[in-house]
Image (cartoon, rainbow, N blue to C red; front, side, top):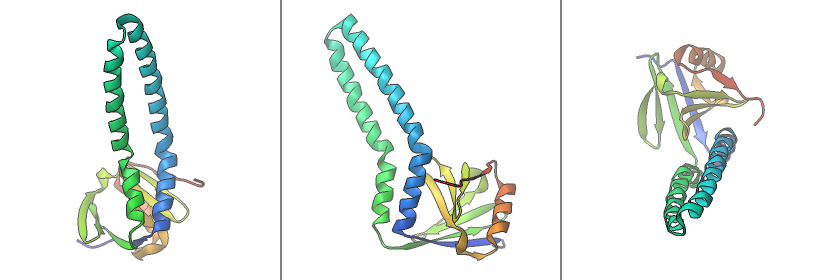
Length: 171
């Protein structure tokens, strides 16, 4: 198959920092709202169960709190991983776009990704974020296309997936 577009983006600490900031603003508020609502419900249930069942219920709710704490650590693990990765040396990610899929090569590992796996695409002034899920995204700098033009790439993406490119003016 013929390569239609190729992008070689240098993943620097600055680029990771911008991604973490963007990701936190897009998805951090949703997570915070869910946690706040869940915490409110748990507090109400704890108060009600202590009134009805006494202090034995407190032990059960203590176990539930430990489970919630463990889950919270797991959810925020991806942000910690990005921060650790950002401290490494500069790595180049190479993205090759074909008619039916694209390939991502990073640290010597090549992954073949169908366009239908892309859930969301955000366009900023200097880069694109292609989200595969809520914690994994491909970052493509607009000035890093080595084959094809950035404007043609945007039109190409519009025709390929079940997503709409969301233009973000300010983050």
